[in-house]
Length: 165
Image (cartoon, rainbow, N blue to C red):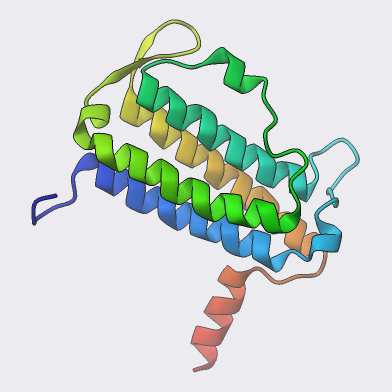
């Protein structure tokens, strides 16, 4: 990449990496014995929320790389039997691997279009931004899971530590 302002893909990846690091910190903060916890009976467990975040990224990154959604990926549940440790590893490794794949394609993906679920053509970067925003929505939800177990999220602890120094 040339010196100067970040290109569109690097800008997207920098933002997504920040979001994923927050997801990872929340997932690390939740003790393994609480991964089966859900706020209400009919909502996803914490474990299922993390699985969903990972699966969503798999589907959308594949879409960006291949120019269309692969319907079969929607029906897979590749993280279902993962332990807490395996989910944490997947959060780290998938981000690194998927970022590398997107970075290698760079501006070519950012300038391309994707056939969306309804058959319409959408800018690939718009689809990827939607993926990141979806991950942000689930990040906000898993913060509530932590608080439901009496655990102060890292973002609050960091602000409190900064304020006390």
